Image (tube, rainbow, N blue to C red; front, top):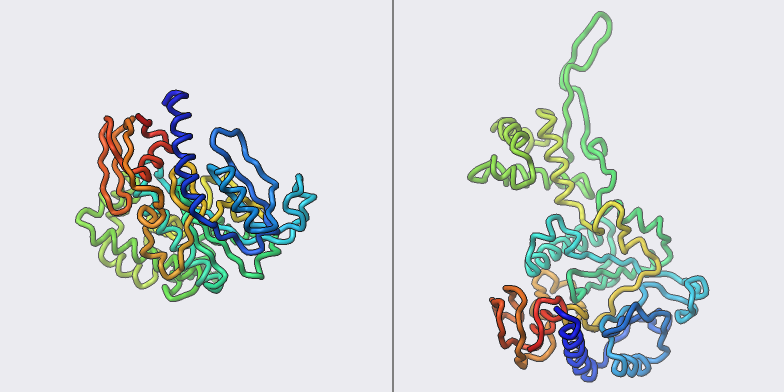
Length: 395
């Protein structure tokens, strides 16, 4: 896309955002007067931040006049949120924020946009239901759930118990959820399976690893449940060898695993015994960990949002500048059936002519679009999505 086309696209998207913001009175977060606000503008460079709004009408006037491309607010509360330096702001506490992005998923670059949103939602439900509600015991009233408007989901934990946690304490929560440094010796119990005697000394002739009960709380029960699920998935497949390779096992190891998974051994695994094969032990533990843990960052060196006590996060009900979708709150009882490609698409359905740069397919607002590399008329809500991602130009 050339510079003129980019300029046209930005002007078009800004105009549609203006229509949205002029018709909306955005709900502001609690204690908004203690929050820092920040914005990215169409055609601008960098971010305007260190702003605060003492009154809701001041905020709405700003939004309707400036028409931001992206809008953010702080997860932290400050004595002086508009102070120019973090030290001068005087930190008062911060929500615990979880930001799940489809970019964090394994093989994310091979997925379609729709598929990646579907997969990251599964991870988000796991985070909320299995970890935050079950393991940590947070009450639902303290959890606020949002679609980010782009590639994932946010959870804000507002329990008073977390507000004063520092970065290292938040890191411990992240380490638990991501299973960082979780070892098999923590999960499984080792015991002798026989005895040998040499002179007066008695030695163990073999060792066995026993899995915890699937009903146990926390990681122990979670790992056992996942191992049993994986075993059943492999042995019930039409081609166990191929299924193992689909799990990411190379051919040589897959052949060894398939050979080791005899009927008797499968029965023993389901009974909680993992003593037969080092290959089996390693595979099932590693795979169960990967399936059970939640990806909260893009890699080992990427610091998760959760650890940041001064994080800026997308403002609820604002529009995402690269999709045109709304940052939308999700009631917990609606999360399972929430469809971001239907419920967050709020821009006009008036049609406009665009030139597609590539073939592209997507379902929006229950309509299937299979677009060829040609000129085509499409609804404005789809045009904004395509223009924002550089997949089309205005004609």
